[in-house]
Image 1 (spheres, rainbow, N blue to C red):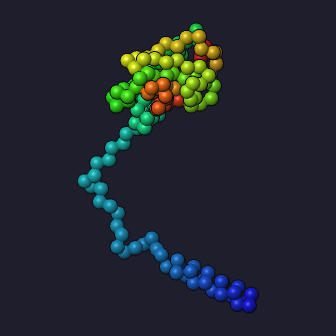
Image 2: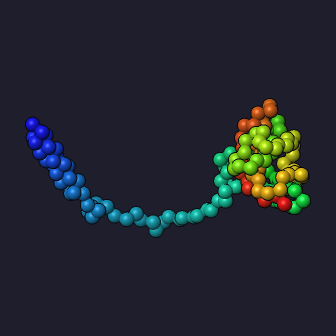
Image 3: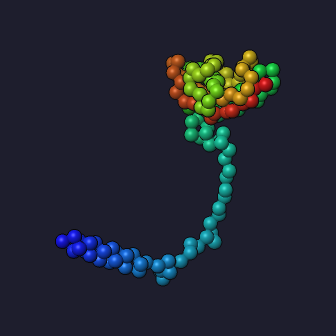
Length: 147
C-alpha cells in the first residue's frame, strides 16, 4: 500500500514537472512595447517631500549651537484648517510620540520655533498637528546633533 502511494506521488510529480517545462520565454505572439511616442520623466523626491505627501506636515531643523535648534514646518492647507496647535516633540529614540521626553506647543498661526536649552547630544525631533489637545498627524523624524 505504501509503495503504491509513493509510486503514485512520484508519477504525479513527474507529470506536473513535464507540464511546467513546456513554457518558454520565446512566445511567438510577444514583442517589445513600442516606446517611440512615450516620454519618460523621472522625479526624485527627498524624504521630506515624500513624508509631506503622506502626512501633510514636513519639519526642518538647524542646530545652531548653544543647545539651540531652529525648527520650521510646512503644513498642507487642509491640516492648517484643522489644527488648533502644533506640538514639537523631542526624544532619544527615532519617531518620538507626544508628549515625548520634552515637548513644546505652538499656536496654529506659528510655523517656526527656536528651541533652547535642549540636552546636548543626538536627539530626534518631530512636529505634530494638534486638534483639541490630541496629536493627530506626525511629521518626519529628524535626528539632530545638539551642541
